[in-house]
Length: 217
View 1 (cartoon, helix red, strand yellow):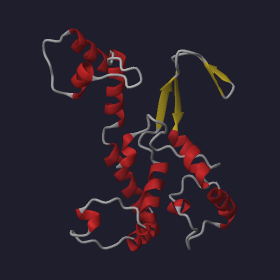
View 2 (cartoon, rainbow, N blue to C red; view 1 turned 60 degrees about the vertical axis):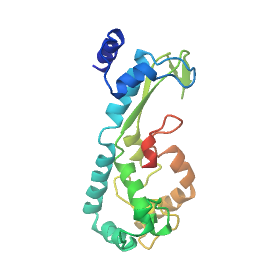
View 3 (tube, rainbow, N blue to C red; view 1 turned 180 degrees about the horizontal axis):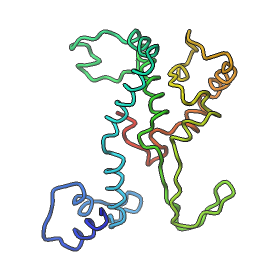
View 4 (cartoon, one colour; view 1 turned 135 degrees about the vertical axis):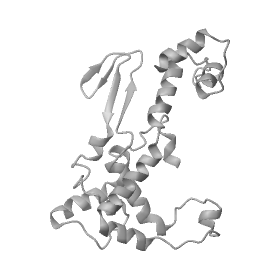
């Protein structure tokens, strides 16, 4: 549908519409080549905006409150960790980033929500003009390769008890609520490889130069 609308606008220039698609057609260009945006580029951009940019923040917030409601002990600990704020406090009036230690558990709850419920549960990328070899498989040119972030985030190898909403796994120091004894060894191993986990097994916003701009929200 997006492709048909884009092609129709390319061929019918008499009527100009003040929207994002029209702006891409008229003003868009490839930053790598400085060439004008073609139909395929415009379709790719609009597909990304419509599919990945629709209700993603509200969906993540809904999942956050769902898990907080399900896990009463987490809810109590989170509420206890948060400050009582007034409208004139800088965190509200100046919209400063909440990066203080008092928000560490809140951030852990957010990260755990995005781990269990990534709104963009999978991502596809198209190979270039040449065939490439990936993990022993030869992939032809212009082939879409998709990866499931949801399955990765629920893989028990990097994530002990993957179906458990456990914000403590994100904290720098082990809190008073330790994991069950059977998982202590896995927990300590996981904490020793925190950097590996964050880079290799956690992709709620994808990665690289084309990662989701929503990571800054």
